[in-house]
Length: 422
Image (cartoon, rainbow, N blue to C red; front, side):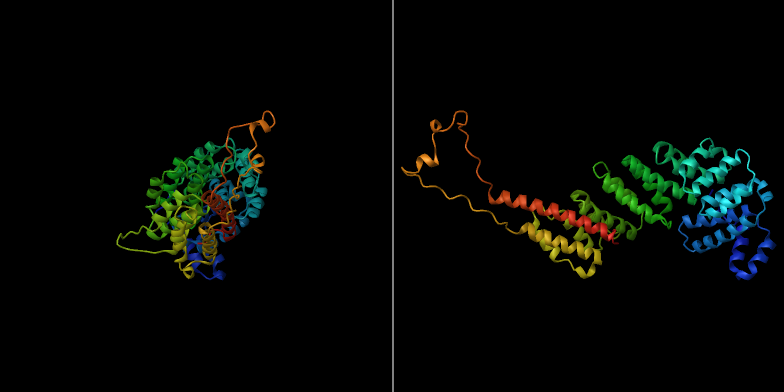
């Protein structure tokens, strides 16, 4: 569905959009644009959006308005042309107005298989996935016109995702096959990544992620991919291939790559994943130019949080004290304050209760202090010595563990409130 070059309908639409609003109706009549031609123009604009052309976003909004008005003005006889009916379905799936779809479909006397298509699309835009699944169950996207088939595969995959992950992935693969380079493929890849995460299939998750980075890194929806990628790597950290993570992110430019690594370091630090935090923090400092040196306070902060309870707590406290909090966001300043408080508690000497005073034995106290086996009730005599009281080192370690556990809970609560401050 990749559409190189300028389609005549797109040129006509570009002229319409460039004109004052008062002259558009007359111009539209002159160009005699059928609904399906306007929808094709919409698809072309959306392909540009998928490739990262943000300037196409305003054009998409205007096109949706024009198409909405055109469908409402088209008489039922106009949908005898299969291209216009298919365009109505594509428009519905592409962000069209649900009320317009309902109004138009209600006017049409649909026969099978169009009746099933209409009911399925209505169920989808109304937010009723069970209705959409039932209506579209027997419709094979691969047997439909290519452009409609890609959208149908995307819808059916989205509906199936809740119950059957394998079936959803198959349908998303069909959507990508039918719509290469389009916004349909971009959406199918993003949803495939989420299903792989749901399945906890780390290899599949990284494979889809690498494809997304290579093809749609500049999409306006790439931030959703970034969210899913960070969550997936942290959630599957036990079985994730960090070399493959690095290879995937190496497909990005330095700024985007560092942004992902910083988010990964932040989340893994708060979750107490020391190894993953160390990896992410180290990679966040890696520059395209090896001679370039950076001292990003965020890297120091995130790497310190996970190791604050280690044997080098004093060194960590010193590192935290050296961070310039003015260079941090407000949210990370709160994390820094919390981490410093933890470090100070960990390295502080806890109050250890004094050992019991030794009892001096004499003729009057020996029997009271150390009764003989003969003086003890039957069955309680034993030769085992009582365990010595915990020493200062053991008590300090236990106190440190409790402090860190409690404070990590607080850090997680703070992070939930901050909602991943960038």
